[in-house]
Image (cartoon, rainbow, N blue to C red; front, side):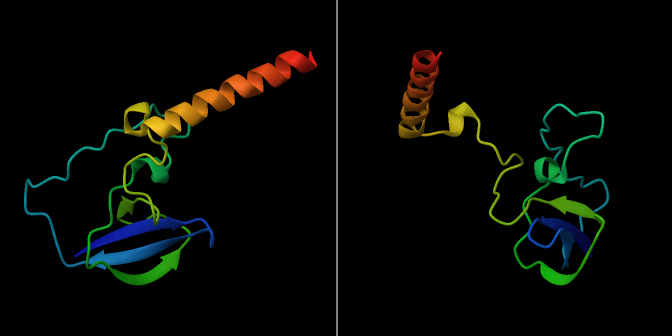
Length: 109
């Protein structure tokens, strides 16, 4: 059995889950791509893996136990999408918003 911990920001605690799957000997999980670590390390919301289907909730606590799972609603290792993951409209809206904010700041100066 494997224990997974998933951060619940609304409660300020980790939810603990258990799965029956157990990796075999020398059957390591893939190494996640992590952002550059700070002096404190990498947050679990950035380093987690997807919680396997069939995981059973077994409790909650203050500390991460076992493997880190991404928070509910986060599909990827990073909660912030890269530019390649954004659709065209998101890029257009972001660019127009940036130009507008720059124009407002320029006019107020």
